[in-house]
Length: 438
Image 1 (cartoon, rainbow, N blue to C red):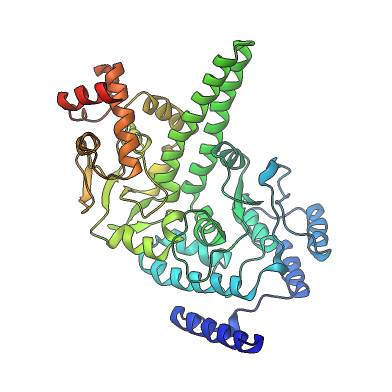
Image 2: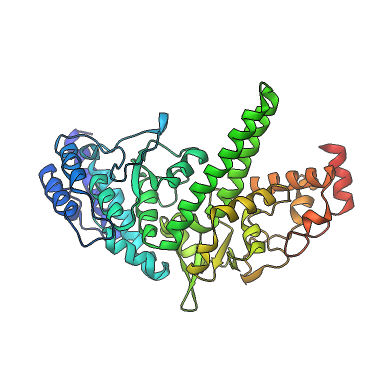
């Protein structure tokens, strides 16, 4: 096919995709460099914001954009983070029309579901940061707006980064953002892109309780690794002991990460007596936004984050990132999220580490159930499926094996009593089979 014909065909495809999403192709037009500079200069001089940008910081920031330097990391606060091999930059001029169109279509689709299912504070944040629009946001401008409103900043990364680095960024009020856009027409994506990091997360920074949870997870990370480093210093030259100490710290952060997952990423909240979304992982996917509240498939469980037993429920629940979540937890109010201090996050992680896990499909004793999903399983079903060699998702498999090994090696009733209600006793026939076959 001649090149001109290929171009015509692609343009027809673009027009059809845009029409389905309610996007006007004329709006998919990024600002010129001169227009971006003018907009940024106006924004930097605002004084009607909670965190005005110091005069000494303005001109170097504008000059970086004027010189064509790609955005790497905000520098308004005096803090920085060593991103190592994950450091990246946004070359704004390099985005293709198709990438901008992918953003425009995704955001337009998100708006339809967010308007119906997102909590009020989230929607206010989107208006404040002007997330809606026909083109991918320029990180220079977006970073300035975020700092002015919240004292958080952006740090460009090349891909999903390790949990330790992710929460290190949070401890210094940096939010890592990728610079690539998902393929045109894609809804759910396992790996975070601009559609998740920006169109999903940025609005949550204006929800003070959620921003505090993010910062507190960063501080919990610092506490975990400070303990690790002190223990390594005491271990001398014992390589095996040092490796065990490092593994223990990484595992602790994994349990803390579950609390983050079921609140910041996939959290629901009660608002005026109705369930609303605020989790960025949910709201970045139009499909999951509807699914999380409207689908009969998912379990939905009401929690009080200030209650230690409910916090343990989060820390002890395993999940997968490869598909829509099977259980969502609904916070009674945002005010209760303020209880998730670094100390409570760390304490819950340490206790959860010594206890059996639940899978993302289970409803367990003590749950305040709002919806029993069609994917629900009983606590012992994973063991029988494992014993029978039946097909099961990886979350069920690894949880079953972990729990059976813990019970085989011995776990005290005193530890189990930390759960709101004791988990059902594992059938002896399952334990006998496991001891013979593990």
